[in-house]
Length: 373
Image 1 (cartoon, rainbow, N blue to C red):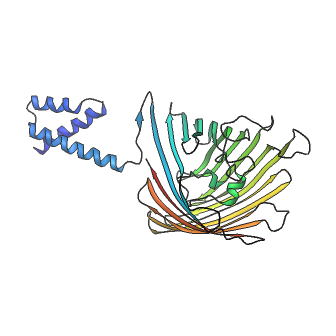
Image 2: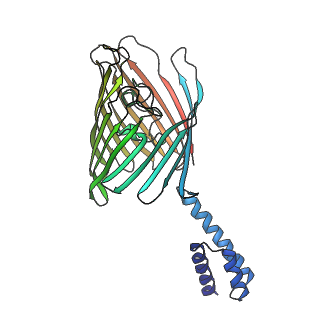
Image 3: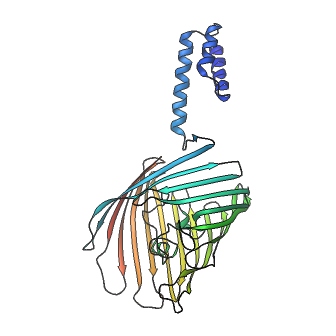
């Protein structure tokens, strides 16, 4: 009896592999009196249970159209409480994104990502040609290859907010070109090589971009911005390196009408990550026209409950004009994350803000719930 059931189950697996009907195979076995109706029902029940367990353990699912593609997305719901007078405590939808990825061939891939909050906008729209691990070409709209924190996806950030210097100097909320979500339109080459136990020791990216941000053509000039990044990973968990950005921006008050101003950045970074402990930091300096800016941060974290409860702290410093005194702002951020599963987590952080010069009471609390699919 066990032999018959095992053989039947094997035939079911083979049938599914060739996209044949499971019920047709079972009906044929019943017709030939190989198995009984009750045995067929038992096999169906076991197969259904096994499929449910497989689906529950999967981290991603694929939808099928003309070609196979992967559809994911997430939303972040936030509550903020402000100490500063004039600001109101409130809930808001921080992000609501739909992300579509796929392969046309094993070499050609694509990605389309849109944010539906406020005014829906395209965030990513690019294609990639991967000829080898050490050489790939990406063209379209995507993140500029600069800054570790900028390149970390918003749904993978350990803290709710990015550091001050990243927001100010990497095409985000306080950059002179406005909030571009750390992205631009252009083309880049990149890859990794010199592997040790399947771990790449050297990673590089080099790109040319408009320098004007997302969903727009170059509005500053005919020149293009050059961006590069080089990272070393000598041992598992430890990475360090740096990058540069050399570009131009439309001057707000140009000395010569129609003339653009420099928009340059240089940065270095490191990270050390184990199963439970993490330590990372960055230093970025930039020049916008005649204004020099710089900042850095150090962040550490520890999982009290492995993969579930993580406590974190950050020391975050930014100087918006290094030639002018009393410009440095310092944030002390501490809090915790609780991961319910791979797709859902709760974050809570308190930020103590200190500015040189006149003291302002502007500390704030942020609580954010993230759900994805």
